[in-house]
Structures are given as C-alpha cells and as structure tokens.
Amino acid sequence: MSETLPEGDAKERTETKPKKPAKKNKSWLWAIQIFILTFFLSTSFSVLSNLLLSNAHYIISIIALAAIILINILFDVVGVAVTSCSVEPFLAMASRKKPAAKTAVKIVKNAEKVANICADVVGDICSIISGALGASIVVQICASGIGFNEALVSILFSAMIAAFTVGGKSLGKKIAMDNSQAIIYFVARIFSVFQRKPRARKR
Image (cartoon, rainbow, N blue to C red; front, side, top):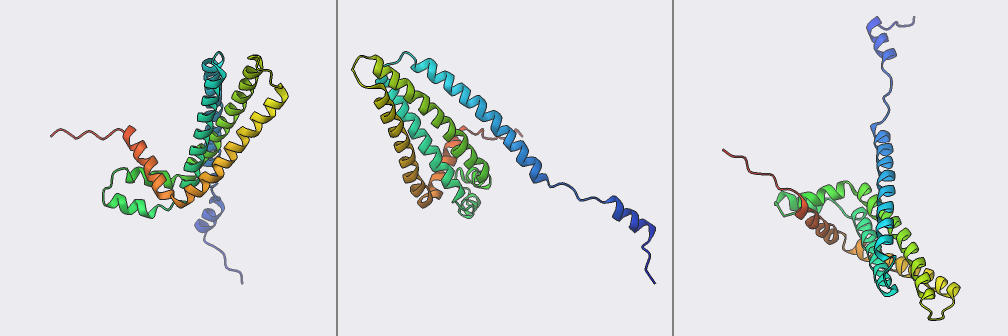
C-alpha cells in the first residue's frame, strides 16, 4: 500500500519553491554600474582631453599620449596582480595590525571587480583616448607644414600606440605575476591614505 504524507508536509513541499540565486542579481547590478561608470568616465575624459589639448603644441600632445599609455599599462598591472594574489598573507598581516593590511584584504576579496575596473574600464577608456589623441597629433603634425605624408604619419602613429600599449602590458603582466603581493600592498597603502580614520569616542 502506498504511504500518504501528512497534510502539513504536503503543503510545505508544494509551497516551497527554489529561490533564484542572489549572485545573478548582483552580477546584473554590477554590469549596469560598470556600464554607467564607463560611459560617464569616457565622456568626461574625452571632453577634458579635447579642451586641454585642442590648441596645444603637438609635442605636449605626444607627452600626454605617453602618459595615457603609461596609465593604461599600470592599471593593467594592478588588474593582473589582484587576480594572481592570495589573500592569506594579508590576513596574517592584518592579524599583526600591519598598516593597510585590512585594505589589501578587501582588494583581494573583490579581485573580480577590481580587475574589471582596472583592466577593462580604465584600459578601454585609455585606449579610446590614446587613439583619438594620436589622430589629433597626426593632424597637428601635418598642419605644421613640415611636409610629412598624412597617411604615412597616421599609420606610423597607430602602429606605435599599439606596439607600446601591447608591449608594455605584456611586460607588465610578467612583473605583476612575480610581484603580486608587493603591488597590491602598495595599492592598499595608497588607498589607506585617503580613507577616513574612525574618530575616538569621547568618554
């Protein structure tokens, strides 16, 4: 004979439904936040670079371009370092109350988000700005009356920007993987400078 479940157990089984995982909702929320952040940052930096460098000499524009490529490489180094770094050394440092150790723990525990911001958001924005700045430099050089061929200068600058960016990131990845703990601790110490220290309570 078939066993019949008690009425209360049957209701509980029919009423309980599998809940949607919270991680999916958080992933969508993070993707939307990154979209908005990237849009506003890229717009702001593009407008700012155009305003500051539109009437500047092409030598100054080249220096600015080199600085943007360097920023791109440095942020990529941080992005690689945080994904290849272990949290255990910083937990040990935090237990010994080392400065900025707790900040380093937070950075490593949020490695996916930190790497997304550093490598994707900042990296893509720098790539867009460096490409636009390179085109502006080509126009400035050709308009200066030196006599260079515009197509040749454009190809040369595009190749140089790509070579320095990709080559710098390739070198930076090796450095980041070999010195991930030192890099993340250095970044944590920079962040800890800007963090507000809790005020002591008055007795």
